[in-house]
Image (tube, rainbow, N blue to C red; front, side, top):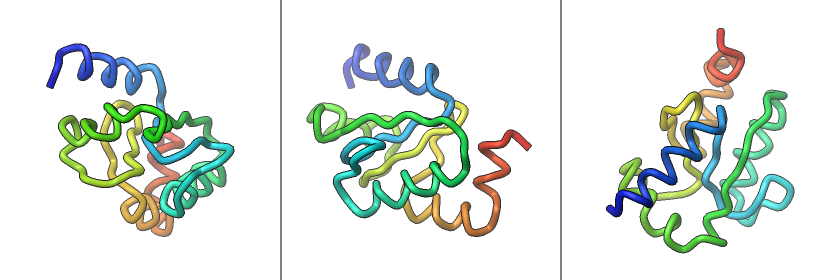
Amino acid sequence: MSDTFKADREQEIKENRILIYGKGTKLMPMCGFSGTVVEIFKSLGQPFEMVNVLENPEIRARLREVTDWPTFPQIFIDGEFVGGCDIAKEMFESGELKQLVDGS
């Protein structure tokens, strides 16, 4: 992994408390999994950002080198990799995700 690629991702993650690497944008998700995650985070009422991996083939191809996670979306909260859509859904349903994003 190039130092620049890793450093750029680390900077993005550091600059955004909640960051989703997904297919599409917050306003227009381009797959069902990304859409589900966007709706979950919108319902939590906390600001979040989304990086469209469809617009950046290098991120799409190489982010798994950082996370060891093969699919998108990939969610980071407070600089930590949380998981993908299924993990977010489980955490949302249990209330754990709300506690995490609310900082409680």
